[in-house]
Each structure stands twice: as C-alpha cells, then as structure tokens.
Length: 201
Image 1 (cartoon, rainbow, N blue to C red):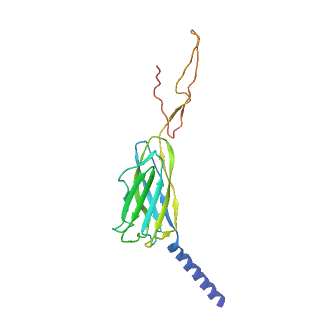
Image 2 (image 1 turned 180 degrees about the horizontal axis):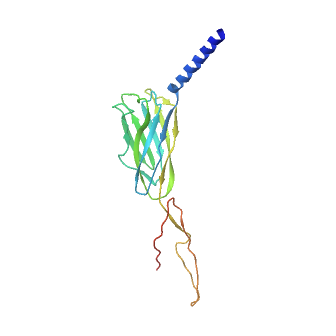
C-alpha cells in the first residue's frame, strides 16, 4: 500500500511538472514563405508564439536586392497587442527593421498567429531567397527574453535565357566557302522558357 501511494505521488508530481513546461517554454518567431512572378507583390507573415511577459519586439531581416519592401504595407495584428502598441518600420540597404513597442509597457496577448504582415515586391532574378530574422524580444524591464527563430523563403518564378556567345565574329575568312559557329541557348530560370522567334541582321 505504501509503495502504491508513493508511486501515485511521484506520478502526480511528474504530471504537474509536465503541465508547467509550456508556461516557461521559449518564444518562437518564424517567417512564412511566398512565391510569385517578377513585378508581383507577395505577403510575408511574422508568426509569434508563446511570447509570455513580452512587451517589445525588434526584428531585423536582411533581404536580397531582388526583393524590395512595399512602403506602408506592414500591419500589426491587433489581436495580439494592446491598443497602445505601435509598429515602426525602416528598410535601408536591403535590411528590413520592424519594431513593436508600447510606451505603457503593456505585454503582448497570449496566442499563436500572424503577429505582423508585410509585402515585398519581386524583381526579375529567378531564385529562392532566404529571409532569416534576427530577433530581440524584451519584457517590461528591458530584459531580453529567450527566443528561437525560423527563416522563411521568397521564390521569384520566371525563365532566364542564357547564351554561351553574345556575338559571332567569323574574322577574316576566304570567300566562297561555308563556315559554321554554334550558339547554345539554355534556360537557367525556374519556369519554362518559350522562344517564339529568332531574328538575325
């Protein structure tokens, strides 16, 4: 009987410790992924989870020059913040900086979801570009809280033609003979390339 009581006690203690883990679990900031064609604007979301006791957030995202921030597109999801929280955005030398703060030091609301959304305009170079956030999450005293991060990706989808020669020069050759030079055309993009016509001077 004593052994059974001790086993039940240990089991209850272990379960209570397991239930207490989420309250002290590390916060996570992750970016969603998007894709589109040159000229498109795509939306990226900053996902925030388990930001207990956090009052402010700073995110720095280095991005390719083939992606440009759409001015004024960043929006703070009011579901996760107080009415007095503010969002400040700057984009300089391909470094996007997002700041969320509250002069009254109100904490973020509990939950998981899209904390901030913003748009990027795609240029013409086909590739997948990583968006890797650097994050500072702080509490009311200004102390940095532990936080993990997950990168997102933006893919520009389009063909890209590549030629092994951009001009052909036969040089000085005898007349009344046939000469041949080859030009190789390839697609180094990530979408099908269609050549509808070839012209020559």
